[in-house]
Image 1 (cartoon, rainbow, N blue to C red):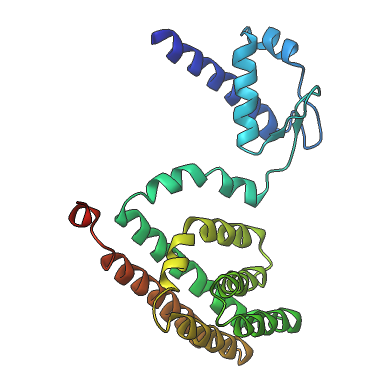
Image 2 (tube, rainbow, N blue to C red):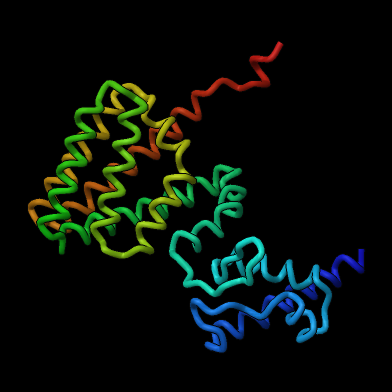
Length: 243
């Protein structure tokens, strides 16, 4: 056990030193890192420590590794940064408290996106939002399609921000809260209610009314959360139904 811990600390030290080189600009985006053998000699470690260190940096989005080639320094992407959180967040969502916290974070985040869209959207952004609403309207009655167009509608608001961090956060939250959207839309009247909320958000954005857009989004996502927990409460208890 002690040997395993020591090896783990060793590759982390190598990863930390390589990361320091990248952040200091000793190697820049597009540059290749020294070969594995050169790194082994420089740091006085074995090949396993070097390879694990490189994999750690790859997972962090700092380098790209292609078979048979030296690792290359790359510019981290917002999507890559969010992907690094995926496993931890999904474990965190294993209990009700974690789900509620993320629902609250989504509400705050998307309400702010709606406010920002209403405050500064250009004509192209508004046109894209109107088109997304039309597709959502046409999808009513088709649960799978409605859910897809629901996601697309909210994504347009994230795109309207012009900030790739916001679009990456939105994509990540869609994945993390997929169950919430699917379950809440099964409730009677939920589809009509969701579309009405989307239309209210669009009306506020078109009217350039940030306060109304923020309120409409907050009400919408608050209702989504309410329907989700109501449906969860009504699920049969497997302990009681088992025979």
